[in-house]
Image (cartoon, helix red, strand yellow):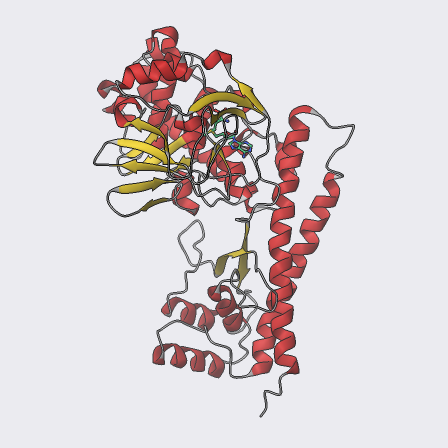
Length: 471
Ligand SMILES: C[S@@+](CC[C@H](N)C(=O)[O-])C[C@H]1O[C@@H](n2cnc3c(N)ncnc32)[C@H](O)[C@@H]1O
């Protein structure tokens, strides 16, 4: 995840790094995501008894007096070792004990071209420290990081496992992310070859592992991405208001409790407002009822549409983002993200105006209609087809078109979910059972979003149909 300011390259492609927003003063909220209702049991992690004293010695200051490291169903966790009240600062980690690309040895750094991402650079730092083993200054931290077989980011899923989420955009995003990591690996390999004593046996799999460690536990800040030991043992709750914040003046990251905790309770923060698609791709987990779920949909202007060229031109002129194909040519595809619409009879917040505008343009049947839309856009704020069409039949037709698209998606999702079978099956266990549950969380969440959009659009059309709009 790149908590705070999600940085990965993929993020650059499709979404911001874990959100980084600035509050008053010099605070920067670092994004991490969260889980809702994380009711997990946990116990003290004896292996980590020495971790906090080690980190505090290294930092030269106290980092936390109210948190202990424990084990939970989701790996390591932090829980309250004392009473915590909302507003208390529960941990404070100085920058000098955060692992950032600044730790990359200058001899290696100079061999890396400017295209290499911060994520890849930080992954190399992790690989070097792993190679050093007990000789590493960061050994107590590095030894706590999850092993490859404990990670479930979709880049580690087999083809059969990925097939379970074929319906979701995460499927393609996973393929894109894998090819991006491979590209980065090929780009850093010449530098590895110059230092065989350090990197000799480092494989693509090792690099992927380090890359995923960074993407699932580094926070972005103004100076790039950093691993923040101790803070990165906090698990995610999407409904929590607590986030990791960075104070540039004091050169530290800290977390303020958003509620009271009793001793023994697991403390959770929010990594960011992440959908299950993002959680799965970048963090390797999902939430059962994730309020931040969303669905990516694409609409095309068909090649057989006699008004295709004119529609494309009008969309282009009025700044509708049109997708590009691999050759950089307009592909006439509109990409949209829809979120859950809270009420079928309310405002429809969740269905982007740009999607409805695209549908209105798509459903125009004459050049005059398109010219009228363009004139209207010029007379208002320049945005195309954001208002209801004057021809109500056409307005209903445009929304019915969206209903048909969404209805098809609902059917496809339904089929995918059915094919996965019941949540618990005596025939599936271990890693596959866990990943199947994640696939179901993902698909059910996206199906919920689609159903809510469908209900809103049906209600919208019904409202026009029952209105005497000719008067
Ligand atoms: C920043 S680390 C948190 C500490 C982690 N549990 C550990 O063992 O080091 C993020 C990882 O913790 C796990 N995690 C965090 N919150 C979770 C949740 N609500 N449900 C399941 N897994 C979660 C995921 O494996 C995620 O990639």
